[in-house]
Length: 469
Image 1 (cartoon, helix red, strand yellow):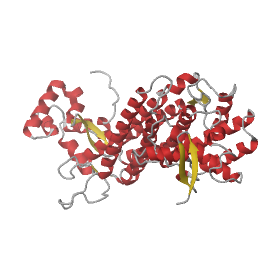
Image 2 (tube, rainbow, N blue to C red):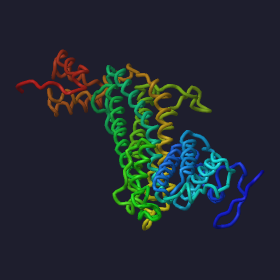
Image 3 (spheres, one colour):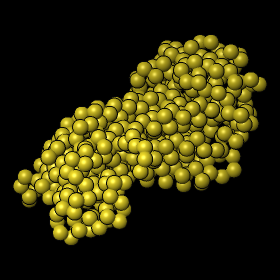
Image 4 (cartoon, rainbow, N blue to C red):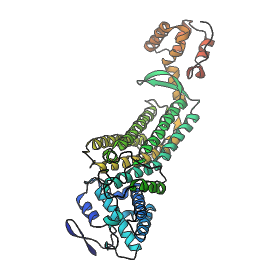
């Protein structure tokens, strides 16, 4: 393999001759082999890093700190990254020591080398344009990296929210489709009162819709960034006014309403916005998992369980039991949700582990947030397309459960009294007779009265109060 020699604080190292990354990236790749997931796995982060570097270059040019030809070359290089080129050059493991320095230097070196080629120089000829002196000018990892993280997470959320919204809409469609299917509602896995299958699916849709709004609120918190704070938030090595101008330019490039943090020292060490965002993802994961549990219960059997809905058959379910088909798609969503919940704990612990003016655990925080968003997007698309769209109602089973249930007695309490209702319910349970037959046997209500009270529309919604008693 052809190589070029590069030099840093620790000495010389041979770098692949055609690599756009440099010596510090290579050292990091050699040091950190933890997840096997390189930065290139998250294109949103690379895109965000490039935007930060482009905004910094133009701001440095405006302050007379960077010559126009260098600034142009850096911005052109950044645009290539924004367009999806050279992402394979981001080889550092996403989890790393150094509070993200390796990620920042991977970006600095790749951008520098792309820029060098645009200026007509060779890879590694840093005397003409340097990763630190030029690409990283007026920056530190400690402001460039978290600012890019705030952007990258928002870009990942932009990709995820449409998938979540589509799942919500499909659940709403199922709610309409099943609006006429009467079934029993259950509390604590026991018969409660009647409802429609449509109401059940409508509730799924509403609960997911709530978290679309929460994600948008969490993204708003990520618009407050610390770019320009450099090492610890004091702004050392930047000209006065740099932070404000750089963030203004970054807002234009990213099309996000970014603003400077009110206190850059606080913003450099605080992980609160990341913790909040992670909490929203955990909340959503809990909801998705609970919904998946419900789908598995409702489709259980199919002959000896609830059997009220039929899930699409995706694959044979057993290597020993012929004919068995398992609810594999909801199960996969369950497991995705558990991973997201575990990631939230990891983010929590990492955020608490920071000391003094910096949190060295930022790489793990960012990895977990980006990974959770990626997993949730793919899992929501899977759940919608391979499960929800194809769900069918078993109307006969739903109706049979209602007719055989003691729970319908609740609808009769205002008309026969709680004591009578309790006694009839107990008799039905012990005898196996239906509530309806026992009510008629004791002449507590006429058949016409009973049929009217037990009409579906009178059991699944509030009824208009009648005057008198």
